[in-house]
Length: 499
Ligand code: NAD
Image 1: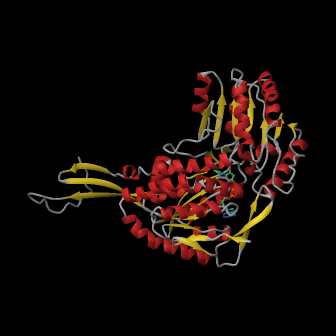
Image 2: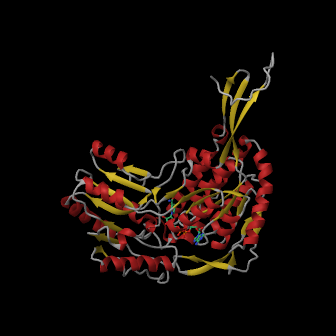
Image 3: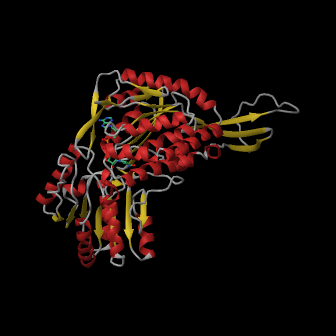
């Protein structure tokens, strides 16, 4: 059985705790490797190495640090197929989707190459007589990231690229379900010239996470994953005096107005609802058509499109629309939520429960499901399903549709499909959701904007990537400097003002 390693001090390092987790190939359902779960002592040793490495890395000029990232981009492109194949093998997503996962991370690395510009401070010449004032952004020290299974390349890069560009060292605790790609990324960064210890990949479970939360040398923690864990890490990290940002789960709605192009909207719903088997935090899981006629016409268009989705292993290539779920437990959970939907009176108009694939009977595949006439009190509406299940909640009016999205506990992404600029503008202004699409189903902001949800989808003041990442991974120091000349005025005991 293959044993995956931690990546410490610039090299692969065997775990010593004696505890391991299973890593599956979700298409076959077979365990392919075991991943070590770090003990608190192993985490402590990793943090100490990172603290040592950070001193020299912070003294390296921002331009030279950016050059390491430039080289890293070249290496990512060189090894794209290798990375994508390994990613699909452990996650289950299709190869084009795996490449998308890597490329959306790579784009943030490219943005971080602009670090010298983003780290420029502020300067006030002659703030008082003979006094200059300047502010500089300095790294925090050792920072950590805890990341989810569903984007094993993109989200680690969203975190470590800006952190490293700012002169921090970084401890990555990736998901234990698809841990190989994060190690491959660390190897490529080392090849690109990152000093040993500046990026440490420590595998593990709650034991490793708690050790990071408790460690007094860890200055900041960035988390992405489910909402209950986001709330736990935010509370514990803040109580320990760390800077913390946590991004949680989602339930993303698409409002479809009566004037929308319904073919366009149906295609958008199929792509955003079933792509990556629905295992995206920006997946659309609820369609909200406005008016009975819109709803009937939309569902009529959706049914044949959903029924014809091709489900299979990544090895089948471009013909496949989506692959298996990540684990058997994820599959069981999705299927039990489907049962609850039926029991609670939703209409299952596309039933994927009997889906089976010859030769892959043990794989974690789930056929596509489409529910109509879902109400907001049903479990399938309230829970984040994270599977290939789209629910339709019919609304009588725009105001009712808007209220449905506003009342939902999550606020990651949302979209509206309409031809009416007035409605779209009203929606974008009033909605209490962090990322909004107008005739765009998955409005993931590009690297130079920031990514973050509202309500139970995001905890903390700053978003991921874009300029916010440079604020999160630095702290500001302001220097007031006087170079006196001429006659000295003697001691001043009052609080100084400029008046
Ligand atoms: P998860 O919460 O199970 O795990 C995320 C990370 O937390 C992993 O590294 C895991 O090892 C760790 N973890 C799990 N249980 C823990 C515990 N009890 N204590 C401490 N650490 C623990 O999430 P997941 O299943 O890997 O990812 C799917 C979830 O992530 C979905 O809810 C999805 O919406 C969310 N997500 C959110 C965003 C976003 O930007 N808002 C992006 C991607 C995924």
